[in-house]
Length: 355
Image 1 (tube, rainbow, N blue to C red):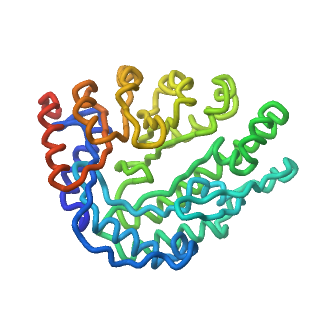
Image 2 (tube, one colour; image 1 turned 135 degrees about the horizontal axis):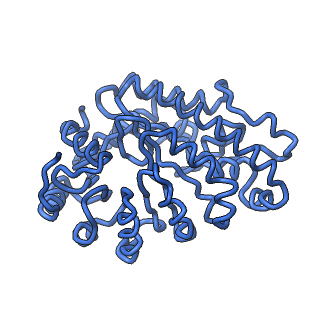
């Protein structure tokens, strides 16, 4: 692989990670800038930046060319139209800025619920496919190809209705919410399979926006909206859809985003097939050390743990946490620093042979 010449070694460690084994250390996904010249001019417009396949693929290629992928860090092309693109596949419009996009609520009247379905002719779905196919033509063999940010479930419904409106709907229109969640669930599986089929033309297994790879079907399932609801409401309205996704996937992590979601951790840890937790305490950079008791609780429950950390905290975290099922993602200033960090991780890991 052009941008990851040590892919076979990284793949072996990742496969062992999913199997609950350790080859020689915890997973460490460390990136660093490579020396080189930026050749691509800035985009002429937001449309070119987000939706012009030629420009988007060229920008991705340049970013990978100028990045060192150390350890289990992976060069991945995934079609990024923002966090609400799944809701756009169901009828929302998108508005783009320089760093993200926003959805425009489309389900204003519950009487339109019957129209809530995935249409393969949807303009945003077609834009997504064009990006993947353009990247495949140019970058096949150079990188992995991943799925976009598929915020389904409560997050999709919040985008379709508006978060504040949906919060009221849970009390005022519970039957409609349940029916909408069922429609969203059906669409999620259609979209997942559709994107996976295209991505697998160009690379094996599954990768996503999170940057982890699996030989099977995998995804970081999520519902950021649960920060606004009680555990009882999570169980009533949103847990059934999450369970369906987890049961369908070969591998899964739950994207636990923010302190407001922590109250639901025990409910999530009780899901037997859930593979682990990706914990995001807030905007980076933020120290992960204050969360060590919770991180150890996740590991004690037998779940994998994926965390993005500042480089200075890699060593204390490796000393405090078990290497089994642990993945640390970080950035350093140079390829040499990245290799030093990987050697440190190997020294700190208990030596054990794979069965």
